[in-house]
Image (cartoon, rainbow, N blue to C red; front, side):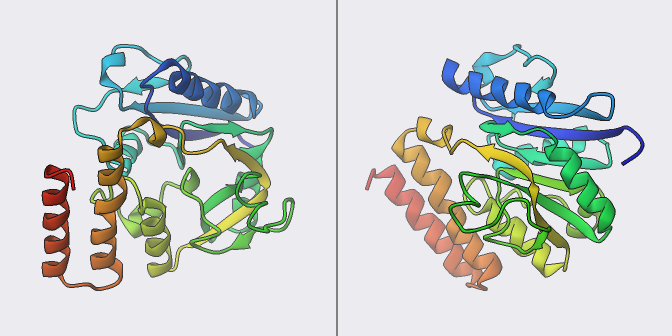
Length: 249
């Protein structure tokens, strides 16, 4: 990597309270401290779900407040479309970026031009799952791939299209993984790149009814899309679930 590289960083944030707001700030701060700004420029876009925070702007980032209802893929697509650099990183707001994480992925992609998608090593996940740190890039899909920090070449979207916005929250990473596998797009775990995921803290702040909606509805669509369940079954399952939600069953 000889020339300065610009990377678009799309961060989905739900700063419903000060703790979650500070998580986003910490993510940005550790990101900016992780690389030499003379070599790597991070163009940061925060897609904020807490519209009451508007017009607040996170420092060193452009913060947008979509009028549209939250959707994990929908909000990521907004960030992707707002930016134009050759590399894009799709991020949660509860990350700690370690020194040189981006350089390691860029070097891996330079050494293997076929690699279009990569994920960094998370000590809280990959180590527990038995993946070795500082190992050669490991090709793989679901299980290797994690959904909270995905680094891609922008040209990947010319092959796979934009992210499927029917997935609102759960199954987003599974859908992305299956899509890469479908189009034979190479994804690797770059275990010399380290980004710690602190845990899904934002989801714990929603009420139980909203949590059920975010986590259960996508299951029906995922089964229809990838397991070839009938469209009638998919619609019926969704309809019955919504009735149960309305009746608080």
